[in-house]
Image (cartoon, rainbow, N blue to C red; front, top):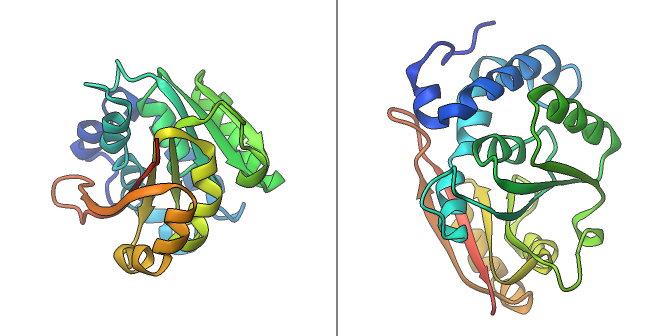
Length: 221
């Protein structure tokens, strides 16, 4: 089954130099993703759009959080929580080669997958943390940015992502259309976790493709 965007110029337009390593990632996902329980059978022909380009939609918001002008100049410490198949963490690491990316994943079989991907893509800026987010907190050494995708509703997410951030750091969470409702329902817990100014922003994916939604939450300074 051929991916609907295979050979599309959108891939290089969105990903730039990361298109080459992420083509290897795409091929591995296409071959092994479904048998290893990382993607559903309906995802095989839409991997570029649903998983890879969708994940790349967080990159501009990470650059903003890091105060970087472009991908090459971006530096800092980022944690991707519940990395699973590598969304968005692997894509972020490929797009931002000078940002140190920690992939936090509790499930051993997914850690094995991520380890293979990191080696096969030659990603030198990644470390894999086999742990729950709650156990990956580094006292006195928080991350600049925390990312995640489809991990938990905001009322739960805030409790285990905000402690990972340094004061003034930012959560960048890929979310669905219910993002604002999640913020409204979880506002007390977000504030209790030292989150401030939670907001939903539309995140373009690529020309002609449906945009996605990102929740941004700053950590109190």
